[in-house]
Structures are given as structure tokens and as C-alpha cells.
Amino acid sequence: MAASAAPEVAPRAPSLVRRLAGFLYEGVLLFGIVWFVGLVYGVATDQRHALKGALGLQVTLFVVLGLYFVYFWSRQGQTLAMRTWHLRLQAHDGEPPSPRRAVARYLLAWLWFVPALAIVSTAGLTSVVAITGVVGVGMLAYAALARLRADRQFLHDVVCGTCIVEARGAAGPNTP
Image 1 (cartoon, rainbow, N blue to C red):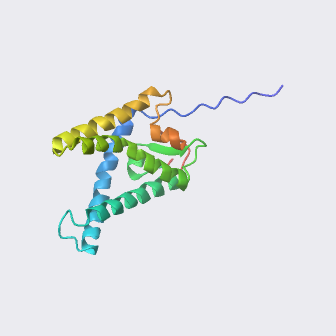
Image 2: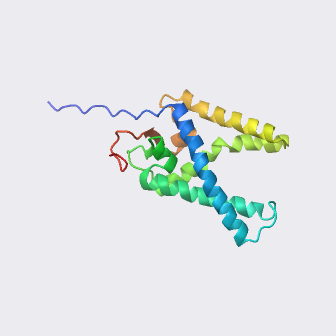
Image 3: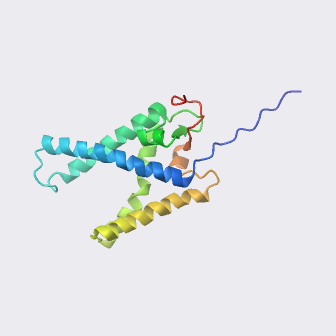
């Protein structure tokens, strides 16, 4: 009689609060990258006014941030903030996502912001308080969608075939 293999259990996502704390910390770390890229861009293009070359700066930042995320996600499954919060991104096979999957995840992760920014643009909002409120509510609504799934994963992870898991005690490059 053959021994039956134990059913494979999908890893459970860390708490939403913990993932949002990692998200916030990621923003703090990215501030330095955005500042540095903005400085280099401004010097390289002789930008003397914030609105001169704004589209070029936005495209440059989009690409640089994409390279940052894709590099860390596909190499070890963790950005610097994810390492601090013991979170790891993996494909369903348990390995870090491929570069192609990481690019898809980066692009789809903009769902955190794009719907709220579309509302801001459509409504013609210009007040910093109003824009911050709409984007904040949009981000919280997107995060809340994870509560509707049994595995508690975000929509962009579901579509890309990735998941965020607990990194403590897991076999991986950062395990002591």
C-alpha cells in the first residue's frame, strides 16, 4: 500500500496590517531613491523649473522603480523593506518570481493608485487634502479586497501567480 502524500497547503499571507506596514516602510525607503533620481535627472537635463520636463522625470522614475522592484523580487523575493518585515514574494512553486512575472506584478501593482488617481483627474481635484483623501481611501479599498479571498492575497498577486508569505523560518536566502 502506497503512502499517500500530504496535501499541499497554500502558504497563508501575513496579516494585512503587517503587509501595509511593510508597504509604508517601502515608501520611506523609496523616498531616497526618488530624491536621488530626481536630482540626477534635474542636473542631467538642466531642469530649472519643476514643470519643465515633468513627464520625462515621471517616466524615468517609473522605469527606475520598476527596475528596483523587478531586480529584488526576481533575485531573492524580497525588497529591502520586505526583508525588514520578514515578508517574501514567491511564485506558487515557492521560488522567487521570474523577471517576466515580476514585471507583470510591478505593472499590476499600480492598481493600488491608478483608480483613485483617475477619480482625482476626472473630478478635477486640486486640493492636496482632497487628493490625499481620495488616494488613501482608494488604497484602503484595494487592500480590503484581500479580505474577500481565503488566502488573503492582493489582486495583483492573484493575477500574476505570486503570493506574499512569512519569511521567518522559511528556507531561503535570508534564513540564518
